[in-house]
Image: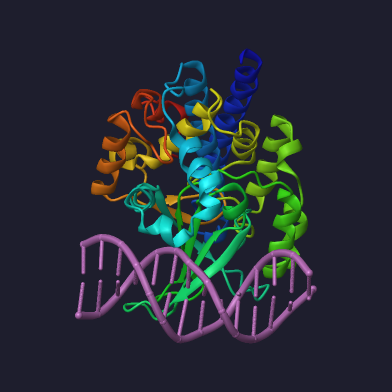
Length: 351
DNA sequence: AGCATTTGACCCCA
DNA sequence: TGGGGTCAAATGCT
């Protein structure tokens, strides 16, 4: 853990330093002769740097604090025992849906939306790949929308009981924008992540597949960071990882993969990670203070979609000490929330 | 053959 | 009761 924090600490300092440097660059580019694109790029980079730093900050604090994991069933309970149990083999999905618990659990799944730019250059007819394997299971014309909505679920749903789903809808206003609504987070191990990723991605966008053709599971933390940096560098081109939590990084995924089934203490990390973003109702005043929309690291914009009532349900479901379908809310918000005293100003956060 | 996508039908919930 | 979400058979693709 200590060595882990050492790495985090270095990264944290790195990112903050980088962020400040970028902010200074941006300041220089605020003159009228500089292009908007340059400014936007710098802005993206700055936000990315600080997001990373904040994530690490949250991660660090979560790791250092004992988490109340053992007594919660959390993720392990929902995907594995619900879909992967021996019973489920004899039980049709229809029966599952008829089951009130199941329906309730689905309702409790965290939900958020990314706004993803389609790549016009490559003729991509959909949002960029997000790094996960999805299988389309439906399409529906939506009453108030010009374009139909597509429904996807995790390819590993049946095999690993991963309940993650997403909906993709082309924006009415700007057809080059896709609104991708994610539900639930991935509990699957994307075994040949790089390969499957590449295969699905090649279908969508062959030009981008090389960038992502890596296997996270074998990455060292530093490698992950390097990879992350590489991706961030092509943020406007390569919206690749935005699943699980609104912001997902390779090292997060690696962690999740490593701790499967997710009842080990390490899972508190991912839980916390997600918590930091999935609880806008409580923490957005801190984390989302910049904008109601959160520009993600890869050029998309995501909005948390848990309604207040949903969130209340999520909280009550967990705090009642019973089944928490996906989220680990049993840890204190203190760790997950961004420190209100975080010295943005002293870091030159505002250029 | 095995996997993904399409699409009409069905189910649930507001 | 209608809209949204999902199922599952049919079809397509590799």
